Image 1: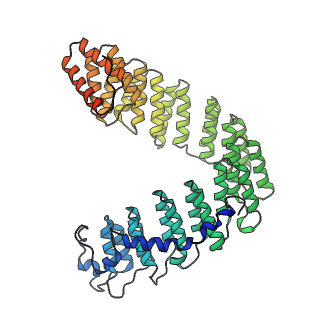
Image 2: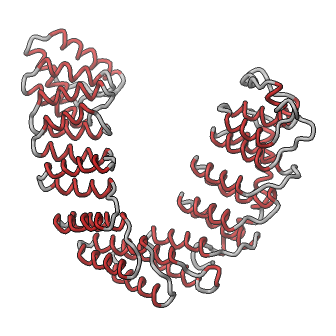
Image 3: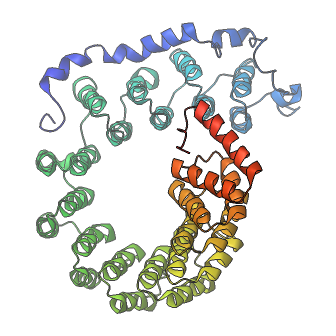
Length: 529
């Protein structure tokens, strides 16, 4: 393993690693202000905390026949509770029942509830208490905590949870926990912590790296473009059966080679995989080559890969087809793309939103928006839902053909549209000097809570001023100002000139008031009047 991420001079950093969790947990427990489990056993701290949940005696006692709340019921109560501190109160209340002891399920429930609300200090206290429990814990609690800490960018805590498995679960971490920790750290670009994880696993825990662990390292090197190191890792993998390269290893290497312009080597590696290691490719592996040839502008070669794939008993999926359709469309070969589209249907595969959007985009870019609209109608009839990207592509096509009425109608219907949808149309209206439609669209955008792009807003104001449309300029300016927009100096100057020239002195004074406010906040320099 020393050939890829480990450095000998770093081994000294790991002498005291395994004591890290216990010391940090005890320190946190002493300073924990949000909740103290020791206090909770005696009763919840009162004054500033939430009032206790209204759990009736019958609720805590369970059915009248047994007057006892079981573990399953406790877990459900904790999961249903929306307030984390109340959930913690439930957790401690049920433990006061005679004969009740928490188990892995109840601890897992309260920890995930606290993690959901980022109550990490409380989690530390819970983990500290778990050390003294006699029940059997499972490492799944810690695997889930690793993911939660990673989402919160608390990368050192990810490693802490890995360290905590052995003292609390009382077993060495499994390969799943090992691979989860390593992958989270590498995906977050925490290479130093990833080395720590590897060193601990190798030197202290005596864990054997399997194929999954090595594949994480291969992926890391390929993403960084360091293919030589990736191949060194693969060489190391071949030394033992548990770590021997598999289909994922080859697919990752092939993708790395392809993305770095070494498609020929990727093809040779594909052949080596099949002939030497007797590994059969799947649609994902084939798609690496299809994507590679399409990116090099060779969709015809990619089509041969698809044909070879089918002849060898591997059925292409929708992703393979969509990659190929996109490859032909990028090269302007619409008829070839349509041949693939018809082939999809002939094999009783259902074209998805991605394939339709690719074809629609090709039609719009080549001035055939009517055909794009036919595809949109076909999508509706087949039950394939168009997404925001699909509609935005069509809006762009309509605007390029000056079909603004249809574009505005689509916007008014407001189906599956976002801020970008409105900006596409407004940008084109400004470029084509369609000021009346532009101001109507601006009002619609502002009413729906969408702010135009900064440059487009300024351009619209400037064009309105130069066209002498004082009323429209007034509506546009103050509508934008109300939503925090700050026009450029040129826009302020033109607006003041227009208002003064048209004898709109009240508007001019209102504009000057806005200028004074903005200049005091250093948001704008005074224009030279």
